[in-house]
Amino acid sequence: MGERSEKSILIAGAGPTGLTLALELARRGLKSRIVAKAAGPTPIHESRALGVNARTLTLLEASGVSALILAKARRLTKFKILAAGKPLATVETESFRSRYCPIQILAQGETERLLLQRLSAFGIFPEWSTELTTVSGDVEKPVITLQHANGRVETAEPDVLVGADGAHSAVRKAFGFGFPGNAIESRFFLADYRYAQPVDTGFIELNFLNPGVLGRLPVNEDTLRYLSTDADFETRIEHPAMVLERTWSSEFRISFRHVETMSRGHVFLAGDAAHVHSPAGARGMNLGIEDACWLAFLISEGREQEYSSLRIPAVKTVLKDTRRNTAFITLKNPVLTGLRSRLLPLVDHLPSVSTAFLRNAAGQDTPPPPWIPGAQ
Image 1: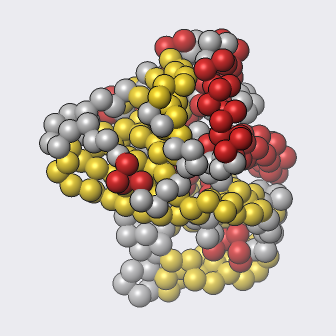
Image 2: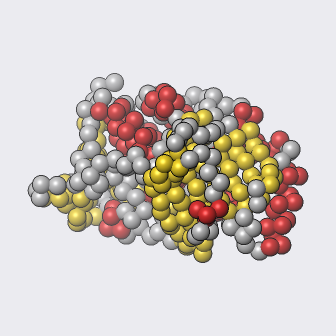
Image 3: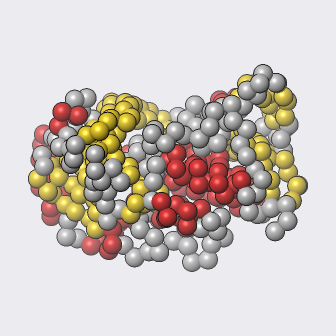
């Protein structure tokens, strides 16, 4: 398909959402410009988002990114749930009937580099270290000021402006999009450990400490992530091999927020700029990629004004799911934690429960993309 130039499109933010949008537009013949305050893609050692779900693989198949992801990613075969080390339930991903495993594991920095690789084939490269400093005009005719790494200041007047610039989005704030919601009380802590030999990366494990939780997630062949609501969780880790180093650690609080509308005039929001929520279920990066694919499709069809009405229901569905899952894993009341430990073994053998869990993990609880025949 030849390049079309009906609209000038400026994307603020070059994370997974912004890169996917630029790529999906490019393969449809629409060239965009992508700028980012960051100096480059997410560092590999800051693995951040880890899960690439089946919906994302379906969406990125046409661009060639899915094949690249599958060549590098690690397939999850099980979700294990324990309490004080005692097994409560196990969900086998092989029981899920779909073209793709519900979740593959690949560090966000790796996913970004694969998107960049495919994007470069269209001659599109992010302008790194380029900050959106001021905004004037209105949503019908946005005027923005960009400051480049070398100090050069530039004014741009795009026909379409997309804020894919994260939870603290400058685009969202400049155009007055509300971002209502709330933060939950619990803080979360994480640490990535690299081992002296390969470790089992085929499963995710949640161990309820009652109260609190300790999660184990694979990062790559010799690195695991541990995530917990307990500040001294590292003393409770049972390492599977000799530790070489702790490669990354962080702590954070979780907020559940989303804009009331994802577009105004010719200004659009996608990814964390439009919604933030718990990492439970690995939906954050995947939902942003889904936003980007829908927006690219709608722009190419001249239907971009339908974007918000089509995406907000999906966003609300995911926030509701992740809020429920987060509340379930952060229970503190001893009566409720005891009840949870008794109920989980009972539902472990119910196929309907496993199917619903895996469908959500696969990202198939939102409307399928209409431009992909037979997509789930």
